[in-house]
Length: 74
Image 1 (tube, helix red, strand yellow):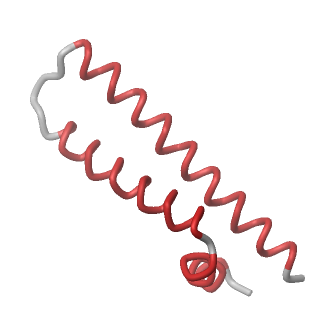
Image 2 (cartoon, rainbow, N blue to C red):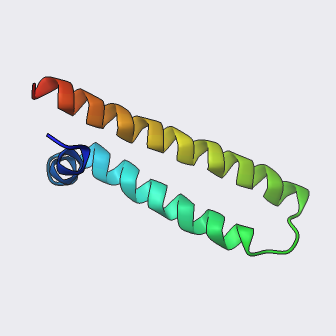
């Protein structure tokens, strides 16, 4: 089964995957908005770094869920 097929299935079957994917997408939008600013305050820089780390954690967790689903269906 391809990753795209697994992702489609997880979107239907896994509340956790849907929530993480939604949060990841929102962080992406928020970071895009932040990147449009010419200058960031020190607090905004800290927040940007926090958001980037959180986004990576979400991406890692989604990849882990995909791997687990792939292994369990082999």
